[in-house]
Structure formats: C-alpha cells, structure tokens
Length: 236
Picture 1 (cartoon, helix red, strand yellow):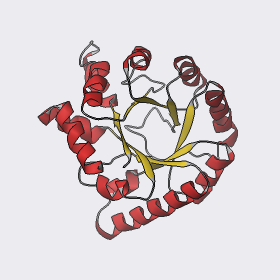
Picture 2: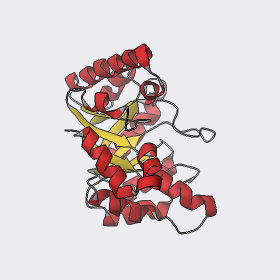
Picture 3: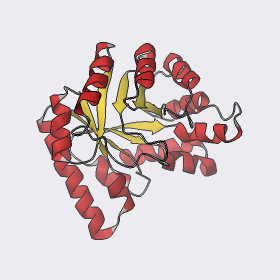
Picture 4: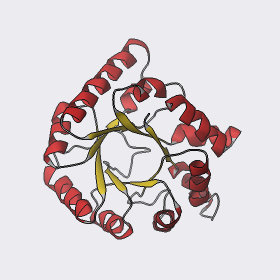
C-alpha cells in the first residue's frame, strides 16, 4: 500500500491570511500523524506565502513520521534544507506568479542547476525526489542525476474526466513503469482528491502519494483527523 503524505501548506495559508499564529501547521501535522499520515509534506516557497522557516524547523523536531520538504533550486532554500535535514526533499519548479505548482520540473532544460541542488542535498544525507511530468525524457534525465525517487505530477490527470482522464492515467502508468525499471522509487501527487486517488494508488509499486488541498478542504467541514483517515482508507 502506498504511504500517504499529507501536505499541510494550506493550513499555513489560512494563518498567513491574517499574519497571525493560528492555525499552526505544526499542530495540524500532529493531528495528521495521529490519524495515520505516513509522511508530512510542506513546501517552503521563496516568497514564504504559506510555510515559514520556523515551521520547517519545528516540524523537523516534532514530526515522528517522515518529513518531506518541497523546494525549488533557489540556493537560499536549498541551504535551509541542508541545515534542517528533512528525511526527504522533493525538488519542484516554482514561479512567484503561480497560484499552485503548474507542472513538473524541467530537468532537461535546467540540468546543471538541478544537478547542483541534488548533489548538495545528497551530500547533507537527504533522500532526493524530483517532481516530474510523465515525460520519458525528464525521467531519464532524473536518473542521470542519481535521484532516489520521482514524484509524478498528477495535475493533468486530476483536471480531466472521461476518456481524457483515461489517457492521462495511461501516461502515468507508463511513466511509473519506466521509473521502476530505472531503479527509482515511484511517488505521485498534485490535485488528487477523494474521487480521483484510487486509480493512481493502484499503479504498480506506487510508494508514496502526496495530497494536500483536498484533505485540508475536507478538514474544514469534518475535521482534520477524519479527513486524513478517510483518505488513508481510500489509498488502502
């Protein structure tokens, strides 16, 4: 069964809307962990729109499950990751004007910058995953960098329906096969919700699913622990 990574960024989004101290994403991480989360995921963005440096440092000291830090190749953020040493770092693309991550990392077009980031993170003893579209060229480039895992970007799959969704799912399945054959672990995430998660969880040898917005959205209505438990059961 894949591990469930709960992304708590949007708990911090609510806090930052008022620039106050609540709700605390660290408290949310504790509740998610009690409800069965296998991984706590946060994205420390360059503009600090939600997760703050303090959050990452306190989470590293308190979370008992795996902490997965999403980050760009920005040197300042990479340095923070190397100081904090989360168990896992997922390298993602980042644009200040985007509302959320819009696609996978372009490793082919930014090979040297990504290589420097991967080497620095690995030198600090951090397991490295790359957030990639289901594109054979990008996956092959990720292998050349010596990354341990690839997280497939499921955004296009999540946004479609019907035959278009089936086509996107087929692309994810094929990419998953390539990732496994290259000796890397298979992760996936972005845009998955309670309706779309099961087919992705069924992809052979899927190891980790990272889901945030839909869990936090449901938590507003039913509470975080119940929202996490329900997603965990769907993944199971």
